[in-house]
Image (cartoon, rainbow, N blue to C red; front, side, top):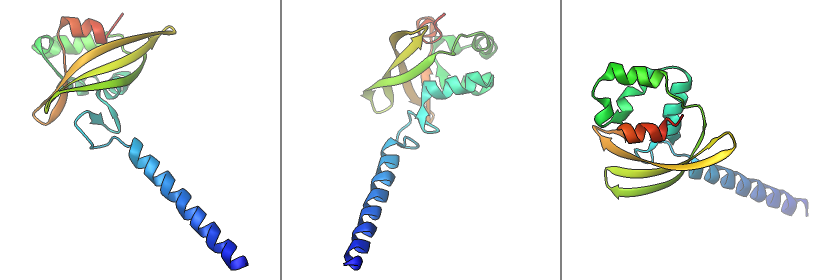
Length: 140
C-alpha cells in the first residue's frame, strides 16, 4: 500500500514540474522573433535603457526622417518624457520584416492606446520615428 502511495506522489510531483517548465517556456520571448529584446518588447526595452539614462544605446533602434542628425536625436531623447507604464497589447504582421505594434500606456490613471511601426533593418528591429511618431511615443 505504501508503495502505491509513493508511486502516486512521484508521478504527481513529476507532473507538477512539467507544468511549471511548460509555463516558463510559453512566457519566454527571448529569441523567438525580432520583436523580442531581453525577454521583453522593443519599447519596454527602450524605456528601461531610457530610465538608466543610456541614451546612446537607444539610437540604433530608430529609423526614419527624425533620425537624420544623431546629436539632435540624442538631445531630444535626453529631454523626452518616457516614464509612463507601458504594455504591448497587439502585433499586426505587415510582411516578413515589418510590423505594426499596439501599445497601451497609463498616464495619471488614464489608459491610452497607440500604434507604432517597426521594421527589421540589418538584423535589428527598429522603430519608425518621424514627428508624428515622436509625439505619439513621447507624449507630454
